[in-house]
Length: 237
View 1 (spheres, rainbow, N blue to C red):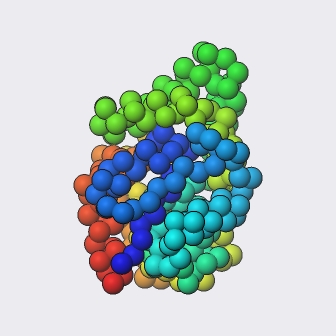
View 2: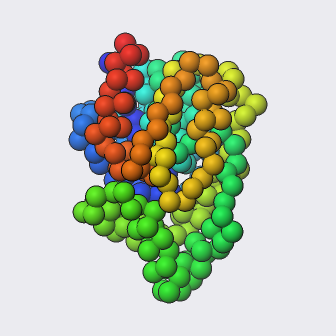
């Protein structure tokens, strides 16, 4: 039986809480809090995060048949893991994912730095997080906002730098595990369609788009995303 592992990013609480719906839907699935998110020191690049994740998973006694499901930073980590250790990965589910450095709106990084220095900046940052999660039901959204308060803007700033240094365009054609890509088409941040680039570069990959979903499809369209994951996993057996 494949082992589902959900890997978070810098948004939707910046911790495993963002996969609340998936952990309920898939008993026995795993979702770590990455180092530097609630506790510990962050990793300097995606490769180090992938090595940390591998150690964390192996410590759980799981060595094979992994289905790695990640969004944003978690998607980068999942992709890196699958490229480095293809024999351990049975499938990949990537959300809000890119295989190259992302384009950022002016002031994106500066807003996080300001939020780490004064209360006004911090409040502005939290409101930006709340706006980005506009499609998440209110109770969960506020729980994730509380997670952001604890994790803090400096962690998110570091995560964005790590994401923007990630580039596997020269390796993507060698990806072996089956791949499912998921995108929310109504993302308030309006990012380029990075997922399409991956889909076009990986023969046999599947690409799904969901309306009334944005940056965090797993929390915004949980029933549809869970069904897509379940069907994907069933097809791996």
